[in-house]
Image (cartoon, rainbow, N blue to C red; front, top):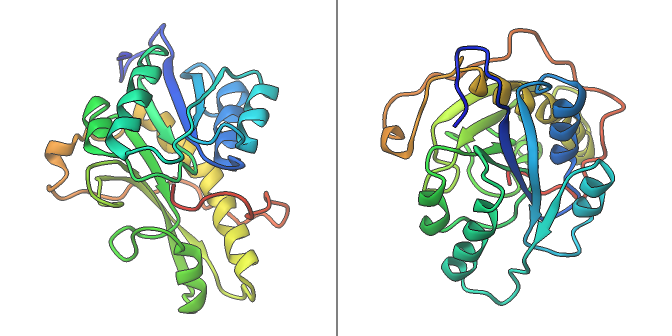
Length: 238
C-alpha cells in the first residue's frame, strides 16, 4: 500500500469494476489523467463481469488496460475466487466499484478487506440496494444524498467515507433526478478517493464497521449540471 499523509512517490493502483456503460469509471479515469487524482493514482485495470459491457470499450479508448470474465451461470463464490486471482495480477491498492452489478461474496470482500469502495445514490442509513433514485423520486424527497462507503459483507452497510446532498426540488422526472445525482457522483467519488489516498480520512476496515462513523462532506457546494452525463445505462449504487 502507498504511503499516506506524506508525499509518496508511488501512485495508488486502482482496479475499477463495472457491468455497464461506466459513467463513474469515465469520471474516475479523467480525474486520474488530469483531475483531483492526478499524481495520486493510476488505473491498473478496468474489469467487467460482462465481456460485452460498453464501459470496457470506453475504458480502452481512454488508454486503460481492460479485463473481463463472464459471470453468467456461475456460482457467486466460485466466480469471485477467479476474479480475485485475476485482479491480484494487477496488484490493486483499491478496488473501486463503478456500476458493478453483483453482490460480492465474502471470498471477494475478505481478499481486499478495507480496500473496496462503492458509491450509492442514497443515504445508506435510509435506503440500501437498487433503485435508489426511483425511491427518492417516488417519495418526492426534496433532497437525497450520495454516499461513498467501504464495502463489507452486508448490502450497502459498510463504513461511510463521504456524503453529499443532492437538491431535488423542482425535479419533475426520474431522468432529472438521476442527472442531478450523477453530477454529484462523478465529482464526489474521485474527491473522496483522493482524500483517502492522501490519508485525510479515517482508516476503516470491516472490523471497525460497527463503530460510529462521521460523514465527510466535500468542502464546496456542488451544483447539479444541466449538461451532465445521461443517467441511463449506468447501474446505480453499484
